[in-house]
Image 1 (tube, rainbow, N blue to C red):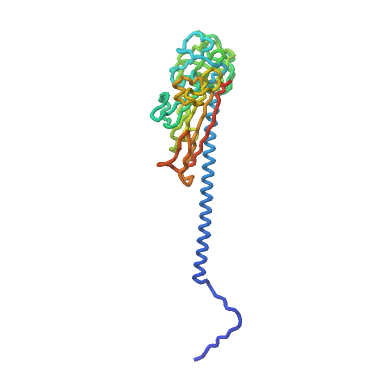
Image 2 (image 1 turned 180 degrees about the vertical axis):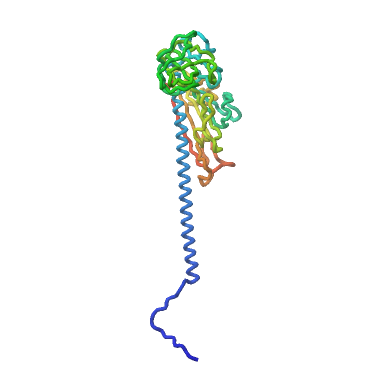
Length: 367
């Protein structure tokens, strides 16, 4: 048998490959790093979701407040004439100074009750005070409703108003490119009296003529007699706008606006509750006075019981906005709203919520 001589050449010998222990250590380190990266990603994603939800809640809340603010300031504005009484029923003769005439069909419908510039509807847990018009039946319970009536924009001057068979029965002449459309409901006012009618002709913007014939449009005009010639008067659109909380397109609560007889439109999603209190002038100084029970701002039911809607000089509004997505907060977020704790106990969710509060004065009724 031949023997093989193994000689040591003095050079160090190196191990080839990895041992099982080294592989296991590497795997553990890799798992730890991976877990850390995943945790960082999850945390960053949750932070992003929270910040996005917060931004959206604040944006929606501010938009809702601003929309209400804009219309609240103009509530009760009938043009340059102030403190007019409604002629009821509307006649066909001369219109006396200090009065306004509603020339529309069904003039006592809530959409055309322009003698009340502002009116609230309060949910008392079982019913509405005052009774809710059928056209607002889509409103959800637990929130208030606010109806505002007044002009919408800057007026246009009447340049001609010929005499007719009845006082004020002819079409009003105004400059062309006036922005009016057929079926617009408008008010014409000469600072001593006013008349509300619906434009009946199809081309008021180009023709510069505002006709108010009967038998055209809805509600339509009951008579052509506006009561006087309004040469030099101001004419502008007037509307009734109601704000309420309804079920939005996404299935959650949303702020809606209904204008005149049009279908209600969703303005902004995520507005969950809406409450109003009212500053009421009881002594004619155009300043808010406390209720007999001592509260500085009156509830809607208190204003209605005292028949003081036309004495409201300011409105305090409180909105509760929520995130559209659930799972934004780590756990249910209890929040105080309108004197009660909201979103606590059984059924509480993990949406983000924020309360918005502001007070608005009615320009037409302040000193």
